[in-house]
Amino acid sequence: MYQNQQQQQGYRRGGYYNDRYDRDYQHRGGYRRHNNYNNQQHKRAKPPQSKPKVVIDMNDDQWKEKLTLPKADVRIRTTDVTDTKGADFEDWSLSRALLMGIFELGFEKPSPVQEQSIPSVLMGSSLLARAKNGTGKTGAFAIPCLEKCDEDVAHTQMLVLLPTRELALQTSHVFKQLSKYLNLEIVVSTGGTNLKDDIIRLQAIVHVIIGTPGRLQDLNKQGVLKLAECRLIVLDEADKLLTPDFLPAVENLLQATPADRQLMLFSATFPGTIAEFKETWLPGAEIINLMDSLTLQGITQHYAFVDESEKVHCLYALIRKLHINQCIIFCNSVNRVELLSRKISRLGFPCFYIHGQMGQKHRNRVFQGFRSNQCRYLVCTDIFTRGIDIKSLNVVINFDFPRSSNTYLHRIGRSGRFGNLGLSVNFITNEDRYNLCKIETELNTQVQPVPAEIDSKLYN
Image (cartoon, rainbow, N blue to C red; front, side):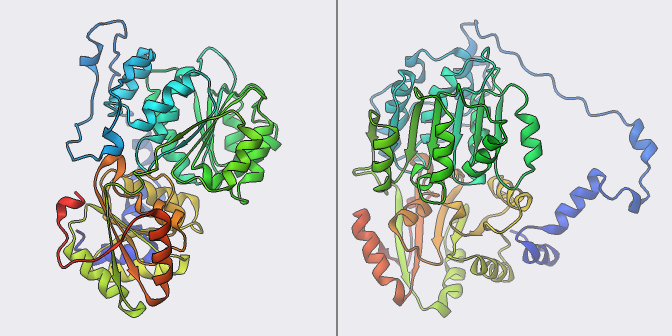
C-alpha cells in the first residue's frame, strides 16, 4: 500500500508513478549534465560482471535434478486443467532441450487442451482448438511447434499472429523461456515500434516470428518478411483475428505462405465467422472443443445493482472488503478509464491504467509493471481482455458491464488462470439488466447478487 502523498500525485498524473521513473532515468545517466555527473569517472568504471551461465549436460541421466525449477503452485485447481488422461510431456518424444525449458517454466503435467493438441500438431494436422481462458493454450501450440522447428534451417519456419501488442510480447516471452536451451532465433514485431528496427532484425536468420497482423503485413509489403517456406502458422485469439479489423491482413499473410502450411487456430470463443474461414483455409482441420461444460468453472460471479452515481462508492466498499492480490477494473471507454483511475488514487489506492490510445512505451511500462506486481489495481478498456496471464490476479470488477457474452467471458477469464479460483463482480445499472439476462442465457450460467460476505477461499 502506498502512503506517501507524492506517490499518489504521481499515479494521478499518468496512470503510473512518473516521479519514480524519472529518478530511475536519472540514475541510469539521463540527467548527467544537469547533475554535475563525472563523465570521465563513469567511463573508467568497469561494467558489472555477469554471472556465469549454468550449463546442464543433456546426456546426463540426472539432468532433471540440475534444473532450476520455480516454486510449486499449491493452490486448488479446477478440473478443466486437472481432468486429463494422465499423459506426461516425456510421452511425446520431445527433445531433452525442449523438456528442460518446459520444466523450468513450471509446467508439470499437460492440461487437457495440451494433451489433445500437442500430439495432433506433432503429427502435422491443422487444428481448431477451443478451450477456456487460462488452461494452457499457448503451451498447446508453442511446445509442438518449437519441437518441429529446426535450428539448422536458415529461414522462417513459424508465424504466430495475435490481436494485441501486449499479448504478442507475453507470448514471445513464453516462447523464449520454452526455447531457453534451443538455438532458435525468435523475433516479436508489433505496431507502435520503429519499423526500421524490425526490418534490420529480419535481415538476419529468424526461425520464429510473433506479432500483430498490421505490422507483419507492412513488413511483408516491404519484402523483408520471408514466408515462402513458413509452414507453421498459429492464430491465437482467433475469433478476434477473424473480425473485419484484422481479417484482410491475416489473409494477406496466409497467401504469402506455402499451400501445404499447417494452420492452427486457438480461442475460447468460436463465433460463426470461423466456420466460413474454416471452409476456405482449413477444410480438413481437426477440431478440439473443451468448452461444452467448462466455460466458467472456478470463477465465482456476482453482481451489484447500483445507480451510476453510486458506482465509485460501491467500488470503494469492495476494495476495502475483498482480499485482493491483484485486480483489473474494466470500463467501456478511454475517458472513463482515466477518470476512474484518478478517483481510485484519491481514495488512497494508487493504480495503473492502460488503454489503446496511450503511447506504446507507456503501455509497455504499465503492462510490465502490473505483471511484476508493482501495483495492485489496474483500470483498463477491453485491450486487456485477450490472453493476458497474471498468476496473482484473483479479482475482476466490471465497473461498466460489457455488451456481449464474448467480451464478458474474456474479461472475467483474466482471473482463475490455469485452474485457480477467481472472483468477478459486475456493476449493473437499470440499463444493463437486459445485457445481464442475455449473457446468462448465452453462457448458460447464473450470476448471483453480491452477498454480505464473500468467502475468500472462493477466489484465493
